[in-house]
Image 1 (cartoon, rainbow, N blue to C red):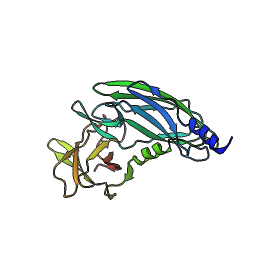
Image 2 (image 1 turned 90 degrees about the horizontal axis):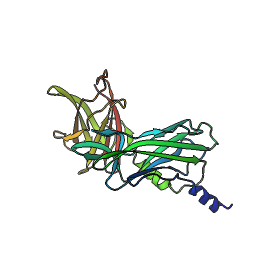
Image 3 (image 1 turned 90 degrees about the vertical axis):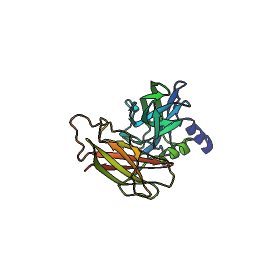
Image 4 (image 1 turned 45 degrees about the vertical axis):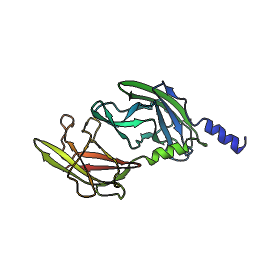
Length: 268
């Protein structure tokens, strides 16, 4: 077999079949870096959503459920990390949810148990899709990653470019979280976050607690920011029983156009 034929044969096996219905479908795609000699290995979970429908981010916001991934039965896998591109702020029946519309790829970083051997990836994903109403959905996929060319490199690279950059408070030029502070607001406490972004940029801010059991409110834009900054606020509400806000590690994700950053900071 010549090189071109070999490349075409590999590219033909670079994605699992779609699994779903007219509302949504799921498949697994491979990247050309998916070779047993390199780790982590690139792949992705692709979700295809019907126009007008959406699904949820790892933290859904005021309502909804995040996708749940089960890789049981995968072979030659030491670890798999699901990566999350910057999400959208989605109004939903008077609430604010966080998620994706259209087609979205969640990149995967896979470390093999034994380098030099193929990886057989098995996935079962449970998720919700919503239009006016939300319905549960399920998808299954299998794909062997054994190296070779892939026709999905550009799509994977674009999804990876949408991953929020890790930063500290005050870091960043185009987009930065400049300050985070807690203040009393009547009988409740709230957190104020000042964000620097390009002029006239539409900024969205999301807040997550230290564990999935936390359910912090979606931050809202408020007045009072210093010149050149945008201010957001959210009430300190949604901690699970027995948890304390003092010293809690809060993840803040800011999104402005194609730029996104993630800052983890502890509340004083």
